Length: 251
Ligand code: 13P
Image 1 (tube, protein in one colour):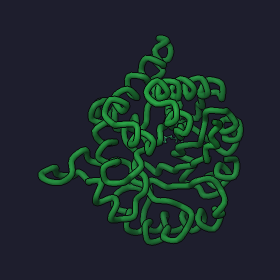
Image 2: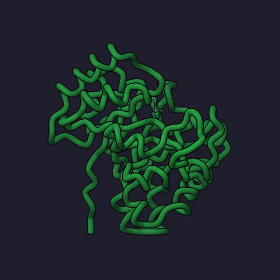
Image 3: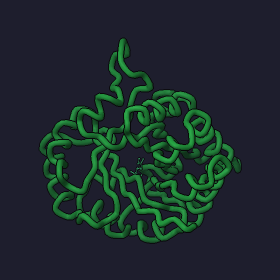
């Protein structure tokens, strides 16, 4: 059976935005996204969830957060639970972004627990993996992304896995303007899909695997044209509605 995977474009604002800027940006995006486009979502900073939830209600643009606690509730100062994200209308949550893995020392196991917490609350985790330039140069790309992915595969069952979106984000391509070539990205995406297939072939065929790292209007079409690239996780270009819409259009 051949699966038609629907493309998905997700914005990640990171720590950017203000009430005024968000409003203008989302107005532009909502005006440009059509209902029969690919899937579209925006992952916004926690304080703006209420504002963005209100603005996105009834539109084809889904809401997401950028991180979630692995815990359900309790004495975890500063953390935000998956249930809380659900209350604000989130569908998605990014887990294991390389910026969290490196600046906040999140381990593979911790990221997998966050993904499990998100799934438990009915959210779709966007599970990020990716190698540094040093690791790529040392020929360790596959080893690293497999290690990161295996933590997820060990933590969730096949039914849950079917609800996870994976994002391949080579660290050296994030915010640098350096993009993986379509062939480089395709090679890793294919390896990730094969790795999932070792656990569950059906889930692997249907799995959405996003590429992230300097995806822009001028390189999106080529990247999104690769057989195993099912969408994008967009940082910088998600802060400008014409750029974001051009990527949605390419998908
Ligand atoms: P850029 O698109 O700014 O490179 O960021 C990619 C990213 O980290 C998305 O999560």
